[in-house]
Image (cartoon, rainbow, N blue to C red; front, top):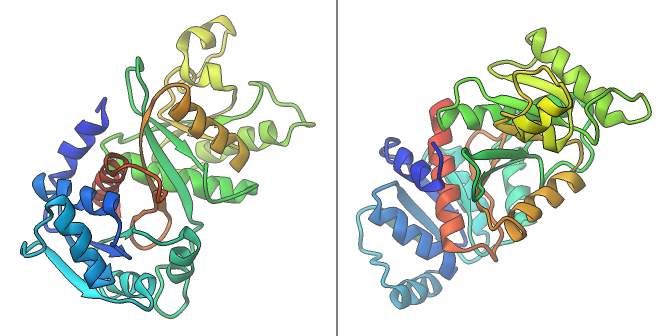
Length: 300
């Protein structure tokens, strides 16, 4: 799989899935819904102000009479309604609409009707970067500020689950640091080495972890060769696991603004995949993210 379009085509294999959208009254969200229906990817339950949803749908040519669409008028708490649909097994994927991430995640973490599993929630992004020969996962660039060693292990497990869903049976994970040698003064290098050993002891499964690796030798086999790094991961990483949110966020935005990358992103670790895109994201990004969520259901 080399493009996010390949991902969308792959997602068609997950038939009969239902997406619950919190406050669907958003033009880019509904454009993504329209495209998903055109591609026969899934069905939707649209929660929010029904009049607003219908007005926007009319303006973009979305036919709300489709048997694959259900509009639920919920003006007070669309986040709760959308999450409860997942909790009650009426839907398979949660999608953010015109609502803040904070409000949606508050509902996700509710002890009564939420989607808690006991796992850490983490952000998993998948990039299509021009002139690269493969898609690249990045985690965690949006949820966990300064994860502990054990939280980093859970973050890797979450990303591996998503990667396996898109067909990478044993993803190669680069535990990122500024350098590729262990320096006790740099905690990221120590944690990376411990994560590598944890994978070798089967505390992290279904992947190969190596670190510390600097970014260049994680993705470039040439850079790894020049530094004489002997590793199954160096130069061939499928997943970049960053030490802190600042590193992840900077890489995410560098890929987008400097490399003109395309992206799909989900939140993993809940009882269902969560499409938690920015309200400023395009319909294409939302569609790609929905495709990633659908593909990841293979391993849920």
